[in-house]
Amino acid sequence: MIKYSVVALALGASTFAHGAMRTYEADAATSHWDLVANSRLQCQLNHEVPYYGEAVFSANASKNRDLLFNLDMVVQPDTYDLASLEAVPPRWRPGQQARPLASMELLRQFDGELGNKTTWQILSELEKGNHPTFYYQDWRNEQDRIAVALSSLNFKDAYWSFIQCRDNLLPYSFEDIAFTVMNYKKNSSELTKSSKKRLQQIGEYLKHDKEIESIMISAYTDSYGGRWINEQLSIRRAEAIATYIKELGVDEGKLVTTGFGEKRHVAPNETVIGRGKNRRVVIQIAKP
Image 1 (cartoon, rainbow, N blue to C red):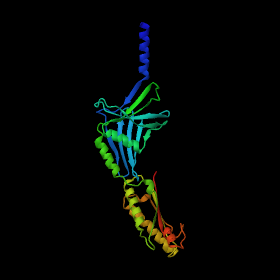
Image 2: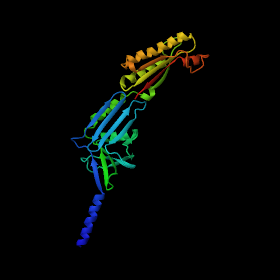
Image 3: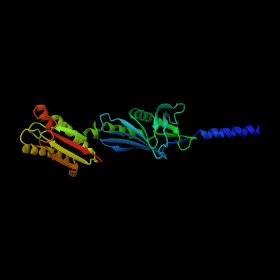
């Protein structure tokens, strides 16, 4: 009888050891949600998970303004695995069951990432007061499982600011304006209507992005009017664009202007359409 009790206790202890769960979650005193980026180019909402890392929600200027989620781990995975994601009700809602939401890939030496659809799900669960929680096998200790919970405490005000920021993002990204070709009216340094609109978009972007390294402005003409006249016209066109950009507050040292005149045609000059394509300015914007 004594032997049986000892064995039973040993088995119980073994089962408990194999079922250990280490949980990381902010409590009422440490649950903070911070809008760390709030501009027309980027929105970012951060939530620190004590002794684990940080949950990061972000959106960037683009046509779709999709949301992204990043689980920034101080200790990144050593191997590939899948983490399950569940909507866990808070302790003050007894009787409610956790619900599965999705899964997240854990890649070796990478943080966890989720796309637009699941990111919105996480935010909606937080808005309802639930605690979205990730579960996975600990790669440092095979006997342990890890639970990483996002606390809904102090969430709503920061979330509202984040959503307002996203609504105000520009509907185009750096990639959309990094290389631009605009056209001019005949015998004029005045841009066409559509090109003026494009230049306004570039200008609006440059107001907010302080990481621009260089802006190259190259202007061209068709072959009508004489070479010297066309060269001077292309120079005026390039400098007019540069002046507009400088007035936005861009450092003059980042601007490079060149007037090529009749050189480097992209279409035949024998047709009206071809000459219209050759009357152009090319803007190339670079970042580090």
